[in-house]
Image (tube, rainbow over all chains, first blue to last red; front, side, top):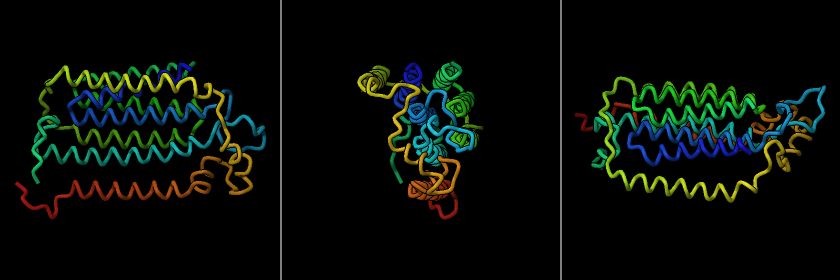
Length: 112
Length: 173
C-alpha cells in the first residue's frame, strides 16, 4: 500500500510543478514527472509478489507471472512521452528565440 | 523493501528537480528520477520497460539540455503569489480526494487482477509463437496500438521539424 502512496506523492509533486512554476522548462519537467508517476502506477498495479518476468521458460509454473498487459500499454506510453517532450521542447526553443525568455507571463503577445 | 527505498529516492529527486533554481541542475535531477524509474521497472519484473525507459530517459536528457544550455535566464519573480498558490493547492486537494476514494478499490499490492492477461499468458505461445508475452501483446494481440504509436511518433517528428526549421520562414528579423 505504501508504494501506491509514494506514487501519488510523486504525481502531486509533478502537478505542483506544472501548475505553480512560471518557467516553461520547469513545466516540461513537471509533465515528465507526472508521466513517470502514471507509468509507475500502471506497473505497480500489475505486480505480483514473488512473481517472475513475463517470459515463458520450460522450468516454470505458469501461475506466478506478473501481469504483462500493463507492461505492454506502458511500453507504448513511454515512447509517446518522448515524442510529446520533444515537441514541447521544440516549441519552447522557438518561443525563446522569439521572445528571449522562458517566463510564461512575458509570452502573451500572440502576434503571428 | 528496496522498491520503497527507490521510490523514496525518486520522490526526493523530484522535489530537488522542482525546487532548484538553476535549470541545468533541475534537468539533471529529473534525469535521476527517470533512471530511478528504470531501476524500479527492473525490480518490478519488467525488463522490456527498463530498457526502453533507459533509452528514452537519455534522449529526453539530451533534448532538455539542448533547450537549457547557453541560455542566460533571469530569476523568475513570483507574480500573483496568492492566486497561483491557492489554485495549485485546490487542484492537488481535488486529486487527493479522488485518490482517497479510489485507494480502497485498488487491488492489494502484489495481488493483481489478471482477468484479461490470463488468457494472453495461457494461449500466447500457441497463438503467436512468442515466448516473451509482452512482445506477443504489443506486436500481435494489440498491434493496432503499436500502429497508432508509430503514427504519433511520425506526427511528432513532423511537428518538431516544422517548428524548428529555418527554411521558408518569412519575416525573420
